[in-house]
Image (cartoon, rainbow, N blue to C red; front, side, top):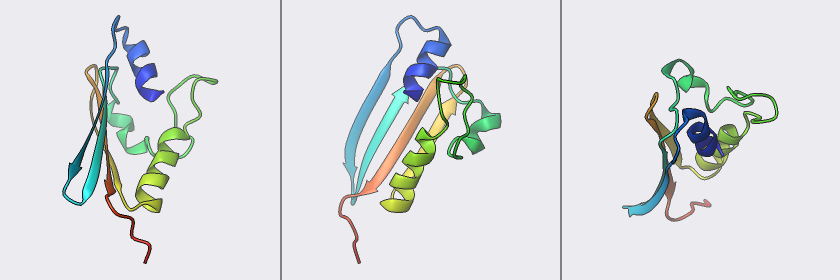
Amino acid sequence: MNAIHAIQDSGEEKGQIVIASRQAGELIEMSITDNGTGIPKEIQSKIFDPFFTTKDIGRGTGQGLAIAYTVIVKKHGGTLEFESETGKGTTFTIRLPRRANYD
């Protein structure tokens, strides 16, 4: 939903969301790229904070990325990173171990 909202906010007539996956050694890597508004540098350090949102009331709760971070990083030992350029878009990259480690 963040990608959809970012595209709507950008005013792009035709937005684009690209989802890709691949095996990278012992990791599965997934990326989600949009051509929306991008994430301003001044808030990038906050986007995984619970309840942080820049959206209007009723449009976002600020929980989505915080939950995603907890599940991917803390529960499954993966990584969740992003690259963003204001006015150009954002790419989120998720990396998860191919095999679960239940030791």
